[in-house]
Image (cartoon, rainbow, N blue to C red; front, top):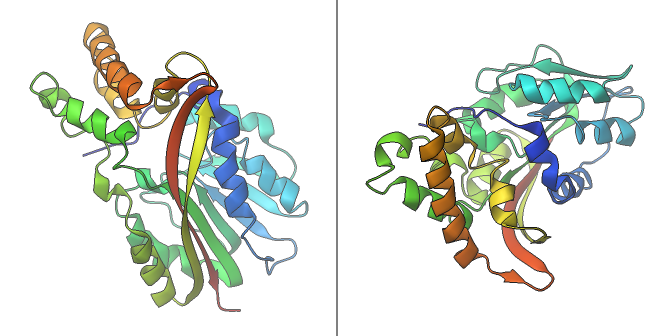
Length: 265
């Protein structure tokens, strides 16, 4: 059973440019918002650098970024302003206390078990004509994650890591999201995109996943640095073989799932 990992904002932001592109692609598909000024929530805002783009897109909006990580929120505070603030919230239990014109979540819902069941309540809090938009990684079958799970399941690591990593059911098939949101009365657009991120530096794929999917394993081994380093070294070697370096960098194919659901006006 996975739990919310301990986040390291600096590590996460090491690939900020690549991580920002899906956010921009999602935002480009969000239609006009019904309220003036609009009320916006960013669910799982992380360090707040992308939440600030919402305030740029809708300058009159009141925007709140929600996250469960104190370290992420501490970094996000640097982006706060008159109409942009941040607050602690656990998305496994969060319930809207007001009406929103846009609920947006970028690369967060895969950490929320049972997130499909939260959609009805969240949509109830949308104003007529409001939008719920999100994107999540859709690549748990990729070597990046499959090799991590395989290694964690071996005899040496199974006892400590066998149940801490995200499993394939943490994100559903695109059709599942389309069906759920459409049945809840939304005009819904769901699609997937595979990005070919060209990463630089030594072991860049390990560096990438060290800010995201590897965090639960690092947490589980935090009390045993020798074991942690041994696991990371073994995983690094597997990644080097799966993602060989080329003269121009290392290519990381990364598939993401997007959904934009607009409530009837």
